Length: 305
Image (tube, rainbow, N blue to C red; front, side, top):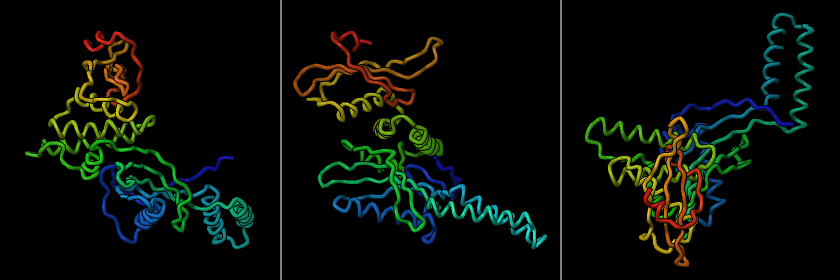
């Protein structure tokens, strides 16, 4: 039977994927972060573990424990009115039954905290993880669920570090430039947090967006789409020469009412066997890849779109 839980936020902190606030050394939050860091250092002792950000610590109390506390408060209130209250005695029985149930099922309060970090194997590129850790009250790790496992390619690790540090995407000459940087990072944070289908694809788009704006000074959607596709090819295809890749223009995808659904792009490349291949990519309106199809020749008409 599925257990129901009451979830309480232990601390209210302003956090983001790219930056975390400083916290008191003695806080429950800090102790949880240290426990996770020690755990990961041991798990990846043959590799290089680099911590980035932690989310807020969440306290998860089983419903049965919450009910016991509520019963006790109600019982004590009745006793103050009448020390021989029958209702209070009935509550005592309920409390005892609940306590026995808690002991039998070994129910206890647990904690959850999420963490962004990288792991680097010798000469390999780092891998970015976003994991959710479930902790026992003593800080020991009970369970780990990976929300994201993203192997960096090329110089993506540098762009993630820029993301983490909130490095200016454009040079800040006035308040408008400053607001542009702040709002863009907030947009990228939401892009990841709201993604429920493919976190890896979202992260690829985030890092490509940072690279695009940093190199051009603006949100160049043609370059962005091509970067996202190029990284996808590097991860999933044996491309012989990336200098020979050809792209179609980026075209909008609309429904029957002319509402924008996303974008499409064709890419022609040469595989490791020196054979031509073409793929069709569909993006949502934030340039996250949503679909990929193989295209049959002839290819030229698609490149002219």
